[in-house]
Amino acid sequence: MFIYKMVQVPPNIEVRAKEHRGNEAAAYLQNVVNTHAQDGWEFYRIDTIGVSVKPGCFAALLGKKNELDNYYVISLRKPQ
Image 1: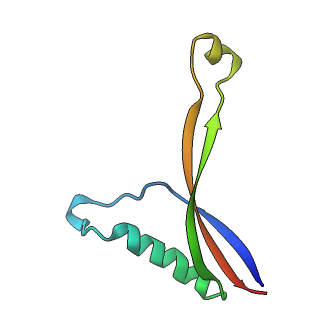
Image 2: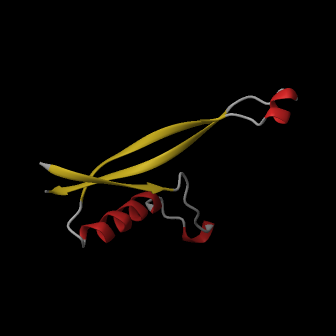
């Protein structure tokens, strides 16, 4: 049996053009996973969660529609 931990990560990472190597996303993920691995957590998966944000009353009257924001969560687990 496992216990699970979820860590929200930003949807985008930023790098300078001169430092861009093409592996930045993997390096970022590896750093997050390794940080939690020090406490016994192992990587399980990555999920995308969509959140629909409804406009306020005034904005809705002006025709603003719901906005969909995507968030990314790294799921970690360790034996209980």
